[in-house]
Length: 187
Length: 265
Image (cartoon, rainbow over all chains, first blue to last red; front, side, top):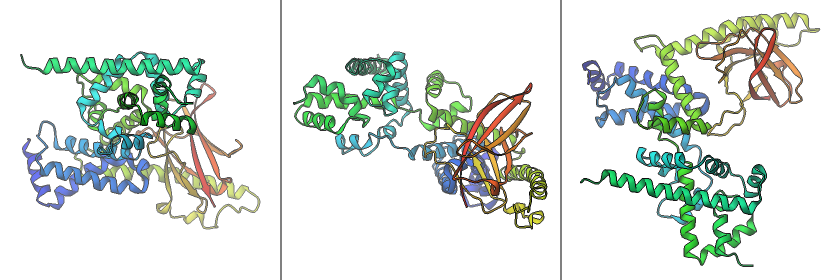
């Protein structure tokens, strides 16, 4: 960690008003572009970001690989984006809760780790364009009659196509997981 | 008639996205209650929904928006290209970087500088529009637009509203902002996604029936890619108004963005 940044972190955590002002301004600037999205909640978002930055610095998570300013900005932006995402819940959350009462998180929440997301993205990448298009329509909340009309196909044919895509996606995921395990297994 | 496994499995995706008709859903639920194989198919369907709807973690998105290259860059790029919500998030992050680049070096007065810059832009626009209002008032019979004290209107108390263009996929809903028509004018900051640069910009204000209520030309695109304009809201009637931002060059105008506002007396 560069000396100036290290001193600033110490001063900030020690309650120095100048250091607090500097870091607050960095946070405020990072969060500034979100003010129209949050409206009256913007100040809460900034307070949340300040809390996250303070927590991260207190726990020593700033390793000093970049500048402190860049780190503070990253934490503040991530906090704002998380807050923005939390405003929208997937519509099938209730169904998932019914099926997995022990896991109250929504599917969106459960895709948290980078590895999990990469796996999901790889599966989508491997899927055909047609399948991706069909799943986007499903995610957009279209019923099968609407989808069949848009694709100019019979509802029964459409349902079979979606089923094939689903099976293909599961197959791809299994193959990728298997490859990942094989790569990680020490010889 | 009882639903068989083939029909049940084929309908699962629409059960998950919540669009099955009540009757069909009831039949499917009854089938699922007694069929462990179809319940496992349901779990698999939800898993595929989860995969298809997965967004990059926010920390990864911030890194990528910052231009950090890593092994997953192509995956993120592909995802963002097909995901309006993530594209919007990337725009927000990039706007934060632009603001930072715009702020003076040294950082201390950074946020204040942005606010000061916006105030200066608003003040300049205010002077122009207040002048325009004065002219309109003089020209209109009876001159009943304002309270008669417009010349001393305290610009510092001017309501400021930032508008996002229509079509922005907002995660928190897309209700248009509400403004009160009690004051003479409202300062608008119009965000835009249009990247092309035009010779001229103008703003037209239309009512719900598409009638033009007001327009102003020679808007100046600010370094932060938005426009600042003072809207004489007292002239606005109707519950909802539409603002159209046009870009012009070679004698023609092209519609760039539209915005919505709701007005309250």
